[in-house]
Image (cartoon, rainbow, N blue to C red):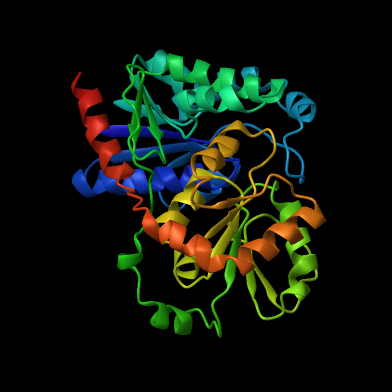
Length: 364
């Protein structure tokens, strides 16, 4: 069995999700051959783990908490040409690796290559068209969000199978889309006890972990938290991700990237994050209270926050005053949000479901 994974490199969420899927696949099929096509963060993440080739991908400029659609358009104007060249590059570099199936997220190269090779393509991504329609009935949807939704649906329509990891407890069945549980790398039970981890990580007290992901979108959030941390001297904050060059407050620490993030997550008091599905999933499975700041106009993140609004604290403002208010509320009502999370059991068996559905697709 030979499988090519085409993975977005905007952040680390898509890479870590597909890595979990690959590990589940290799567990059942140890002799399966894996190749990765990625760029930026996904290329860096996979290049020392599996045979990995570099492709051209999206550029999402800016360090604010919203998508600049005009800047995005200018930065990606020539991307269709690069997608075509990228497809050829993948095919040439993988000359001795003709996959039996292609797995992609929202990268068109995956679908293009599958067509060239006359193979099937499975798309795995968190955007839920049905949830979007539900959201649009009661919330304003601007043209940026409409464009994103239309683009994702178009990618979905070109795939042979669409797998959508979902937070819904009982997702409705659909003829085109198949819902699976969210994907997680490790469960809390697979890690050492909190006492052992506190010693391993050299932590004197439990921190709030702030996950920015691999993109620059969370930079503004990190800057604000660093400024207001002094207002909460009894708390400690540990920021992960982004590319920060700040003078940090006394109770703020920074780790750009670590494969041990889940260890820090297990001993944390709570999670402050954007609304990427991977971090939200991990925090929910680890039963951690969540303060979430979805990126403005980022339709997938907005829908993730919408799906979980009954269990987590969501703030749609990233101003200094707004972050200060939300953080104060979060810390004050931490026990309240902890109880909310405890009441709901979140399953994360998505990787096992992915393997089963990949098998069925190959058999057809």
